[in-house]
Picture 1: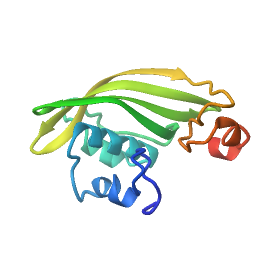
Picture 2: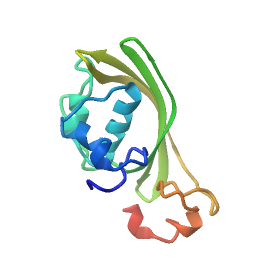
Picture 3: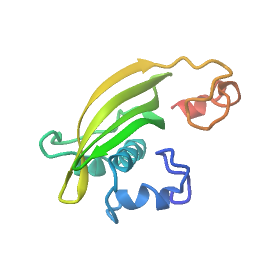
Length: 156
């Protein structure tokens, strides 16, 4: 995965994008960078990183990702930061139980001791019904009809 594109959608190699954050080599510089790294952690099944970057006041005691959907792409809709507070509005696309879906959330972040932490969010979920000529939800950038519509192996 080191030389592959980062799952966060930055178009950078994982090894120079979210990889160093996941390995503990650095901390996210902005709420958006933390959101991207958390999406990549969901996509690559790194629950320890997710718990580490979750604010202690709202953090669950454990996080099991074994039945999680396949997270395929992330779109940042808006991001802001005012002092030690930040917010990110995003839409994450996933494949689960034979269908495409999305999770859209406005997430709140707080900076404590030089590190951004996820505090909470207001999520909405729904189903996606891509048309044949729409961009594929898998994040490839190709049209759906030329990508995943006929490829069941990408949907497991």
